[in-house]
Amino acid sequence: MRTGKTAAVGAASAENAAARCGGPGRDAEKSFEKDYNVEIIRVISCIMVIVIHVTNYYCRAWDSVPEEEYLFSLILDTAARVSVPCFFMISGAFLLALQDTVKDYGNRLKRFLPVLIVWSAVYYFYNRFCFGMSYDLREVFSTPVEKHLWYLYAMIPVYLVLPFLQMIFRNMDRRWEKIFLIVTGGAAVLTYLLARADERVYYDLPLVGDRVYTFYVFAGYFLYRYRDRIKIGQKTLAAVFVFCAALTAGITWYVTKADGVHCEIVLQYGNPLIMLMSAAFFLFILRLRGGKITLPARRKRWIDLFSRCSFGIYLIHIMFLTAYKKMFLPQDLSAWIAVPAVTIGLAAVSFLCVLILRKCGIGRKIT
Image 1 (cartoon, rainbow, N blue to C red):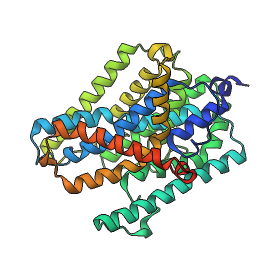
Image 2 (cartoon, one colour):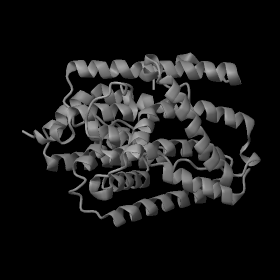
Image 3 (cartoon, one colour):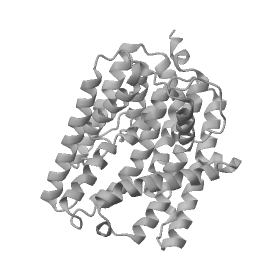
Image 4 (cartoon, rainbow, N blue to C red):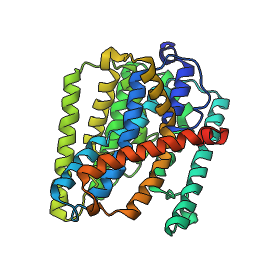
C-alpha cells in the first residue's frame, strides 16, 4: 500500500493547485503551504502562452518582415513552447496524487464545462459582431470557436478518465511508473513521427489516444514525485533546454526557407525535442533553491494574485490580440519592439479584466 502519495502533496493543496492550473474552482480557497516553485512555473507559462500567440503573428508573416525579425520571433516562439506542456504537467503533478470520490468527479466536470460553454459563446459573438468572422455552430464538437480554446477540449477527456488514472497510479510502484512513462512517451513520439510521414498507427494506445497531452499529465506526476531522485544536474537540464530549443528553431528556419512558407510542424507539442525541453524546463524550475523557493511576503501576494488569474488571462487575452491584429500588420511595427510591448500590454490588460471579473461569483467561476 503506497500511502505516501497523497500525503506528499495533500488533498487540499492538490485540488486547489490543479484548479488554478486548468479549470474553475479557484475561488474555493483552502489553507495549505503553497509550492512556489510550481507557482512560478504557472506564472511564467501563462506569459509564455501570450508570447507564442504574439510571435506567431510575425512568424507567419516571415516573407513580409525582415529575416532578423523573423528569427527573433521564432526563437522566442520556440522557447515559449514549454508553456502548454507545463500546464498539463502541473495538472498531472497534483491531480494524479488525489483519490477522487464520485462527488469530486462530478463537481470537477460541472465546474469545467460551463467555462467551455461560456467562453465559446463569448468568442462566437465577439468575432461575429465585432469583426464579421463566421463560424458554423454545427462544428462546435470538433472545432473550437476560437483556436486557443483547444486546451479546454484537451482537458475534458483527461477529466473524464482522471479517477480511473488515479486508481491505476495508486497501485503502481516506481518501476511500473517508469515503464508506464516510457511506453506512453514512446507512443506519443511514434504518433508524431508517423504523422510527419502522413501515416498513423492502426490503433491508438488506450489512455493516450492520438495526442501527446495525456503523456504530459503522466510526465508531470512522475517529475514532481521523483524530482529529488532523478540524477540529472541543473546545468545538464539547462543545456538540454537550450540545445532542444536551438535545434527546433534551426530546423524550423531551414524548412521555412526551403518550402517558402513558415513551418509549424516542428513546433508541435508532440515533437520529441519539445517534449524533452519541456520536461527539462519543468524539472529545472521545480528544483530551484533546493525545490523550495522562499519569497518576500509582498512578492508572494503578487504571485498568488497573478496565479489565481492565470486561467482567465489565458482565456481572455485573445480578444485583445485579435483587435490588435485588425489594427496593425506585422510589417507596421518592428518585431523587436512589438513582441515585448504587445506581450506586456496583453498580459496587463487581461490581468486587469480578470481581476474585475473575479469581483463577482459568476466571474470567478468562468476564470
